[in-house]
Amino acid sequence: MAKGEGDKAPVHLKQLRLDEVLFDCMAAIRKLYPAFRVHFDIAQESDQEADLRAKGDETLLKIAFRNLLRNAYLYSSDKQVRIEVMQQGAHVTVVLANTGQTPVIEDPKTLFQPFRRGTNAQQKSGSGPGLSIIQRILAYHSATIRYEMPDAATNRFVVGF
Image 1: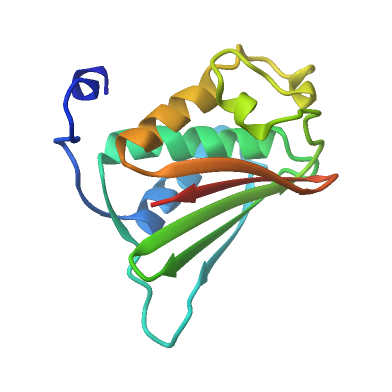
Image 2: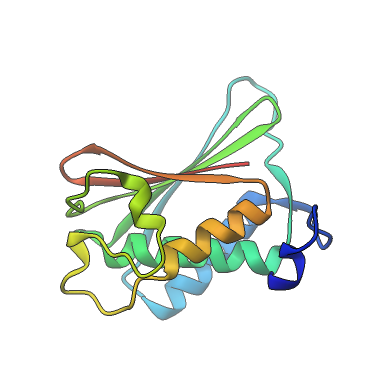
């Protein structure tokens, strides 16, 4: 990733099915945490099969999604993660959500700063660089990520390709 940062465009990207990348990541997390449960849904606008492909480096995307899934599991109150994948035109959106304590923060963007941890991380191990690395990986893929708190007990990360 560091080698590619000096370049204008990523060079190791190929067409990947995001649902397949997510399935591989879910299997890896399930091996580490047998209690891990996922509710997976593909939302479609029409009767046509969704084209959930994006250009990406498979290894880097797996690192990003494994970290997001691991965090969603560890910070959930019921050890369940909801994933929804949607296609709107040429854009693919992946939403990962859990039920659990939300951080007390003024600006959700601060969660993506290196070594910054939310107030809901006080009893969790780790040093806090995970979300900043995930954001860098996704930026390398010209993708976006944002954190949302739709209510007092829901954490949601929205990734757009």
